[in-house]
Image 1 (cartoon, rainbow, N blue to C red):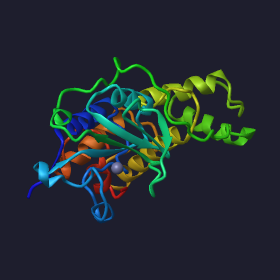
Image 2 (tube, rainbow, N blue to C red; image 1 turned 30 degrees about the vertical axis):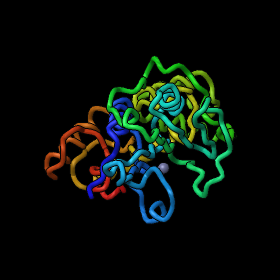
Image 3 (spheres, rainbow, N blue to C red; image 1 turned 90 degrees about the vertical axis):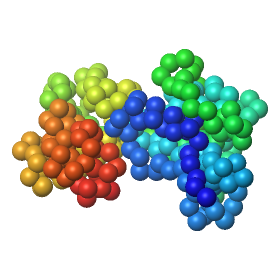
Length: 260
Ligand SMILES: [Zn+2]
């Protein structure tokens, strides 16, 4: 029998993709694998109800998780969600420690209720209207220590054409503003800190630019900033390799570039 992802979750995934087009999909998923098949999981098709799959996983990297949580938690279709070792579900969505094998540290798992109404594909309240909910506590990341690390961050930002003032290795207002500009351009949370998510976007951008250069699609430098030129080069690569020309380095394009 055929199986399918519930239209409500298709809609949620589409909205998330629209809102954060550069997000990572490395840990995305919906259909159960062998490990899931062996146990009860909303990732397994419910063939008694026509083959519906009632859960998706959305990669944490490159999205605003608080916004997703707010949208999911305020929607009557949601049954529960898990991320970073915390499960929240009905009733009340209060946080409980998740003791399952997979702590869901790199993605958020979202399950809808086992009702027909929960499958309906109307829009979720993503990007406003969902209220604000604090994300599950993440371990505090130590601030970049020492001037050497900040100097290299400042040098990288400057190479992207962002204004960091004097390269002094001090994480001051100029560095924060430049990091925020980078984060804004890449649809990341604008906290002004060169944290793991920002660093990952930068590293992935560089990988894309290097690969394009190696393939002869780029004459620009490898600066880690996904600007108009990079998008144009990606489009050119997509055109010549028969891919959808959206200028975005999505999973298929990354794979074709030999990155994922
Ligand atoms: Zn899952």
